[in-house]
Image 1 (cartoon, rainbow, N blue to C red):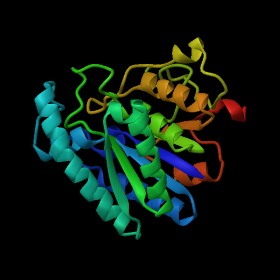
Image 2 (cartoon, rainbow, N blue to C red):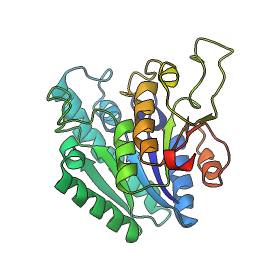
Image 3 (cartoon, rainbow, N blue to C red):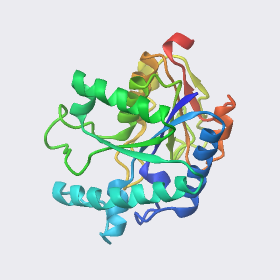
Image 4 (cartoon, rainbow, N blue to C red):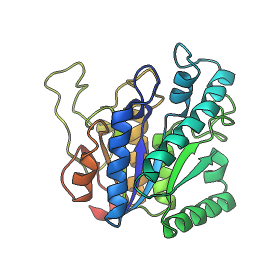
Length: 261
């Protein structure tokens, strides 16, 4: 399979912004094993700003745009160094791809991006994609910024005709209620159609270092499933779930691509 895996900040880092070494190492090992088994893997990774916060010893995620961009610039170096070292230990080569909204929305640039990503996969590389947070700003507006990596990962999955998009988060999947508030909340294993009722289940974002939430994940699911790609939301704290997913076992919440219902 061609699999796009999105890793959130809360999966990669501790609340301090410092790297969660054990969890990140386990994730990279599992993804390396998927590649060894013959799967093509593209990684969409958040965490640049979060890791920059830790590297710069800031008290928390900055609120002003210049400091956010500075943290992203520092953190992206740390992030790619970490991936290069961890995947390199299993003889896999990573390739950094930093994007802005124009790269995916302008047809000519989008076509170039598709060609580059597919060629990287043909060469056996593992593309690591992130929005170019050092230059993209929410202040400029929606036409020049993607804003969060849930949507970016879905856009990438559509561009490369992925078989599956996996969002690794800090929650097990989509629940009937907020599981942090209601003990009787039940995990929804399969979503066949994203209805208004499903959208109403989205809650607020969790980690203070993160920018996304369930609403952005449902938006990503709409993008992916409309193009016929299945999407799974599951907990990134259990890296072994990637093996189960590759084997077709039920993990988290699976949103069915339209042509596969």
